[in-house]
Each structure stands twice: as C-alpha cells, then as structure tokens.
View 1 (tube, rainbow, N blue to C red):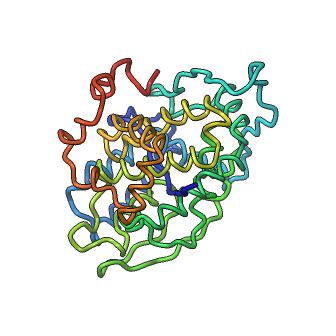
View 2: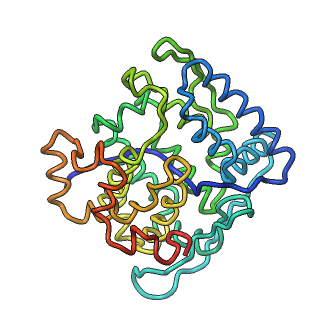
Amino acid sequence: GTRLSLWVIKERGERDSISSEGTRATMGAKASNLRRSMSKGAKSGNDEALMRMQLDEDILQEAAAIDAAKRGVQGSTAAAPPSAPPGGPHVEHVPLNWKRGQGGHKPNDATRRMLHEAGGRDGVAKFTNLFYQIAFQDPHIDQFIRDHDDPHGDRFADWITEKFGVGTPWSTERSTRKTCPFHAHGHKFESAHDRSSAHFTAWHSPKRSEENFGEHFKLDDCRVWMRLHFWALRETGVWAQSPSFAEYYLKFIGHFVSIYERTATLFVRESARWSENPANCEKYLANGRRMDNVLGLSLREACKALPDHERDSVGDWPYC
C-alpha cells in the first residue's frame, strides 16, 4: 500500500489563565525567550499566534510537567488499564476530556484503555514514524521540518502517550534534551526543546522562502498535515485495530490544531475521509505529492467541500 507521515497540532482559541505560580513563571521565561527570538526575524503579524501558544492551557501544563521531570517527580504510570468491553473492535464514543479552566486535556480510564487497545506507545509510534517518513517527501510540509535526523516520530508518540495518561515519557525526554543554535535567512535561533518552540522554529525553518519565512501555520498547511497524518493512522492498521482510539483521536487533534489555526478544526473529519478512497492517495502521489485542491484556497472556497453539519460545527464537535 501507499505510505506517509508528520508532527503535532493543538487547541481552541481563547484560554483561561492557570493559577499555578510555578507554571506561570516557567511560561513567562519561555515567552520572553520566544519574543527575543521573534525580534530577530519573526513577522509582527504572528503576535496573535504566538500569544495563543503562550497562554494555552496544555502548553502551560506541559511546562509544569517538564519542571517536575527535572526535579525527579514521577508521573502516574497507569500500568494496568481498565479492561475493554467484551467482543471485537468497536467504536466506544468517549467525550473529549477537555474543559476550559481545568488545565488542559486530562487523561482518564477511557483514554488509557483506548491507548492500550491501539497498541500502547509502540502502536502509536508506528503511525507517527510512518507519518514523518511521508511528510519528509511532501514538498509543502517538508519546508517546515528543518532536520530529518531528529526523532520526530518517537517524540510525537511520547507526547500522545503522556496525554492519554500512560507515564511521562515526553516530559522525561524533554527534561534532558539539549538544544543547539541554527541560522535561517540571516537570523539565529535555538533548536526546539518543547512543543511551542518546535512550532516557532518550524515557522522559521531555513527551508522556507524569504516571502513566507516566519509566517505561522495557515489553513492549507494544517489541512495537508492532517490528511497525511490520518493516512498514516489508517495505513498502519491502528485505525482498524482500535476504532475507538481513532474516533477519540480525531477529536483530540481537532482540539489541538486550533491553537495554530482556529478554522482548521472544521476540516478534521474531511481530512480523515480523504484517505478512505485510495484514488485520492494515488492522485496525490501522481501529482508530485502536491495537494492542489487544498493549497492556496481561501476559507470560503475550502468550506465548499464540507457538509453543512461540519461547516456549522453542529453538536459542538470536537467537544462532545
């Protein structure tokens, strides 16, 4: 079968503040560092996108988690997930466990059970690594990925595993990750050390054109990213192995992608349907791995491809 791969996206627009003073201090330092980098080359039009990352509840929680990892505080391992209902694979409809003001997405027994059904961390790593293999070959998405040698797929799998409530592999790895400087279009930056800095450095990848250098992710960037990502989820068999995980994961991505581009959430389900039809994948490959029916479209034009209930967010999806 045809193959693909790529990396992480995130949440709803406005965010309530978090009460933890330690978390605030950590994020204040991170925000200051990002602003210093920004002054060296970012476009001022990205202020709002940068602020959304700085105030995002999950990123605030992740900053606290890395501090805990550095202090040697262990998170929950949840080694014995609850048993799945009897019978073969079926779709268990689990509401997305995110509410404003609770400190980001929270794992529970259901998320741990679904992760276990999908093969655990190793099962997730199958599709995150495949995702990146194909993303490296997509000329549009690859412009955001500075270094193919970084363990992008494994880091993504660690992040998902931790978000679903099994250990703290992502925070533990980040607590010892080293950074190094790089130059792009005459500006100096530090390599990524967490999720917010990873996306900031992607905006400033040296592979990007001078015209687009520093621009935050747009709707078409997110749509191509999601199509390839869900294609990998389907291609590796993880979707078929745990339809419950897949259904929840689409809502999970629908929530997390909105921090980068708010309108992208509308297109999550359409992006997942794209790889249902092998002809779409074959056409993409034959066209030099370019999605001409996505790139450059305005929101108005893109919405023509959506059914009414998705375009109008009926049922408060993905928060259901």
